Image (tube, rainbow, N blue to C red; front, side, top):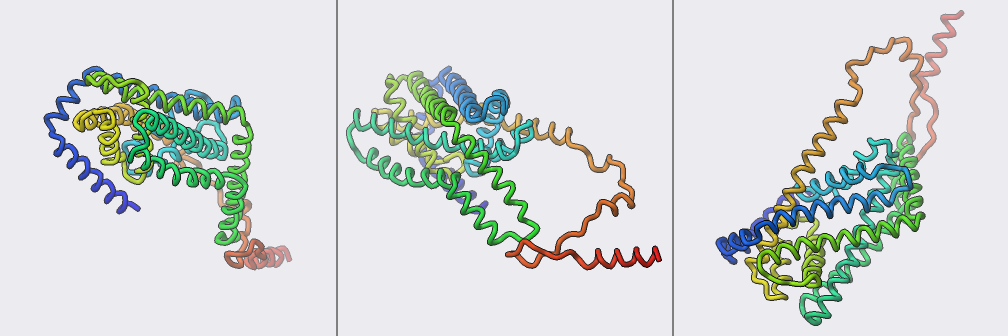
Length: 370
C-alpha cells in the first residue's frame, strides 16, 4: 500500500510540474500575485468551512453526548491529516474518532459518529456535484465534461449505497460472519465491540431529525467552500458569478474525491481546474494560480491542525498513568488473582475445557493439608 501511495505521489507531482511548465511559471506567478488579499480571504473561507464541518459532525450526536468545541477542534485535526499527510483521505477521520473517545465519549459512539459523519459528507457531496452538473448543463449545455461527470456519478451512487449498507444490518451480519469464521475461541470478545458499534450506528441513524440536520449543515458547508473560487478569481480580475464558481468548485471537489488514492490529489486538482475554468474562458495560468492559492489554504489550515494534533497527543501521554511508577503487586496477590486460561480447541470453537495444570495444583494443596 505504501508503495502504491508513493507511486501515485510521484505521478501526481510529475503531472503538476508538467502543467506548470507548459503554462509558464512567470504567467502563473503573476496570476498568483494578482490575487493579492484574495489569497488571505481564501484561507479564511477554508477555516470557516472546516469549522462548519465540525458543526455537522456535532449535530449527529444525541443531545449532551459531546461538546461542540471538541468536534470542531478535532475536525481541524482530521482535515490536517487528510490533506497534508501521505494517507488515504479517511485516515484522519479514524484519528479524530479515537481522540474523541478520550474525551468522555464512549468508543463505540465515537466510531459510529465518524461513520455517520463520513456518510453525510459523501451524500451531500454527491448532491453538491449534481447541483453543479445541473448548472453546467443549464449554462454550457451537455458537453464532454458533463458526460464525464455523469459517468462518474453512475459509479459513485452504487459505491455510496454499498457504504451505507455496510453500516446497517446486512453489514453487521457480514462482519460477524467473517469474525466467527476466522476468530479463535479467546477472541469472541471482539463481537461485543462490533455489537456496540452497530448499536450506536442504529441509534444515530434512527434519530432522523439530527441526521437530516447534519445533511443540511454539510450541504451548506460545501456551498461555503465555493467562496474560495469566487473570491480568488474575482481578485485576479475574472468577473465570474456565484453560479459559475459553484460549478467549478463542485466538480473540482468531485475530481479530488475520485483521486482519493493520490495524497493531496496532486495533479488531479490542477488538471480538473484547468478543464473547468476553461469552460468560462479562464486561461490555464489563472486556473493553476487558483490551485496554488487552494494549496496555500491547505497549508494555512493543515499545519496548525497538525500542531494541534501533536499537542493533544502529548497531553494524552502526559496524563496517562506511568506503569513504572506503580508499586509492584505482591506475588501472593498475583497468584490469588490468577485465573486459568481456557485452552482453545481451534479457530472455529468457542468452548474449551479447563487446563489440567489447575487441577494438579489443587491436588498438591490437598497433600499439604494431609
